[in-house]
Image (cartoon, rainbow, N blue to C red; front, top):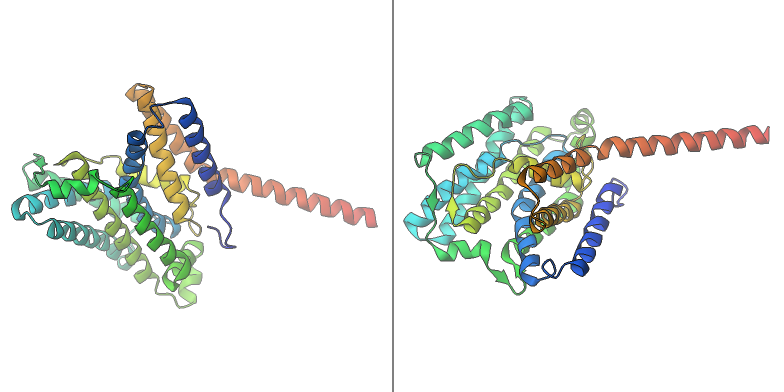
Length: 331
């Protein structure tokens, strides 16, 4: 959502494209409109979409996090060991969320208080978290034997997959936090101008640190759902996870330059991204061509800011020329 409270053009278009895709494919493909396939799309969208909710806050500030895929792998394999050794699902869930939140807090604290660029810090922890995921169990995966734990990712509440329900609940809470609280206004202010935020008395270091902790919190849920979905925690998992999450956020209209974004549009984009992946799989598109398609989507998403500014600039110049012509006519 932009500063005037209106839905941004890019986010609005994402929702429209999602609805059109869903309607057309539901009419054209019996396989697509099957309940099991729709559940699969929503389930897969939610696993990355939850992390994308947290990433929205970070990108609105003008930063990003490259480490969340490695964080997910590290937290996932440790959580699998906890649930297998203790048999306690609540303990494993709390462990995953707390560990991921602290990992995000570590990123945010160093970035905010040591003035280290987010790119450098999160690139470093990208390697550190992944290395620890390999070290933890000697580079071997851990099979999860607790069915109650795996049911979190694989069962439904009514007709909706549990991961989708979790994404909606977290998304609503995040939207309220961003749009209805002082903290959300401070996040947006940081994205618009760090200097102006400091001058106005905002504790910019605290705001930045908490945004990365919030991203870690969301990544903890994604870790639970990823290992539950696969019945396996592996150090090799989620190697492109950060790119997928960033793409969803930008595809939803959040500006990479910061200062503007929408949680709802991020969730729309997550479903759209999963929908496209599902279609490619249904039509048996070769894996390499799938990478080309997803790479193209990434480029298009990252070009939103450029084209939006281009269109805005054209409209402003057109309006100026019209005003000049009207002024000349009056003379």
